[in-house]
Amino acid sequence: MRLALGIEYDGSPFSGWQIQPDAFTIQGEVERGLSQIAAGPIRVFCAGRTDAGVHATYQIVHFDTEVVRPSGAWVRGLNALVSKNISALWATEVAPDFHARYSALRRTYRYFLLNREQRPALLAKKIGWYHRTLDVQPMTLAASTLIGQHDFSAFRSSECQAKSPVRTVEAISVRAFGDVIIFDITANAFLHHMVRNIVGTLVYIGAGKQSVDWMREILKSRDRSIAAPTFSPNGLYLISVNYDPQWKLPDARMLSGGGVDIASFVV
Figure 1 (cartoon, rainbow, N blue to C red):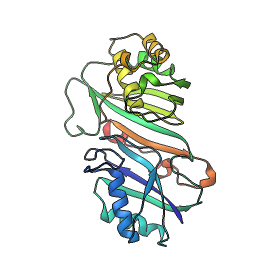
Figure 2: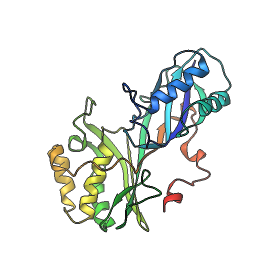
Figure 3: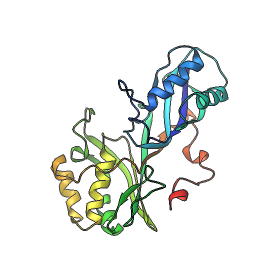
C-alpha cells in the first residue's frame, strides 16, 4: 500500500531534508516517526529536497507500507513522535504508481525578505533581510527575463546533482508589502540553490548595484561565477506542489483557511 503525506516544517534546526550521517534532518525525523508507527522500517520520498534552514508549508512525501491504519492515525501518530518543528497535515492512500517527486507537475517557492535598516529579531530564522532600500520595479522587470524554458546553469550550485540544468519557470513575481518584499517562483522543477541565487541577483538589481539587463547577461552566460552570492535560506518556503487531479491530493489552498497564508503574519 502506498500513502501520500502532506507536511509542513520549520527548517531552522535541521541540516536540510535529506538524511546525512550524524545530522538532524527532516527526512530522518519523518522516517523515524513513521517507522515507530509501522513497527518496521519506512523510507519516504519527497517532492522537493529543501536545504538547511529552508521551510515548507506544503511538502509532499510518499511511502510504502503493509500496515493498515486510518489516515488520521498516521497524522496524529507522526505529530506525537517527531520534532515539534514538523507537522503532518494529512495522509491519504494513493495508487502504487504515484511518486511524490516524479508525479509533480510544478512547485512554487516563496521568499520573504525584510527590507529595512534594522535586522529582524522575532523572525530572525523565518525571513531574509537586506538593509538598503530596494526598488521593486527593476526587480520585477529583471525577473520576467527568467520566464520560460532556459538553461539555469548560472543559478545552480556547484554541488547540484541534476542531470540537466534546463528548467521551465512558469511564473515569477516580486511584490512589496510595507517593509516586506515577497518573491514567488513557480517552475516544473528547481536546481540546487536556484531560488536563493535568483533572489540574490534580484536584490543586487533592486539595490542599484546592477542594471535590469544584467539578469539576461547572467542567464545567457551559464556562468555561476558572475551572478550574485547565494542569498540566506531563512526566508525561503516551499508553499505548493501541484499534481494531476487524478491523484486526488488535497490542494494547498484548501489547507490555508480560505487564502490566509504566512504573508499575513509577517507583513
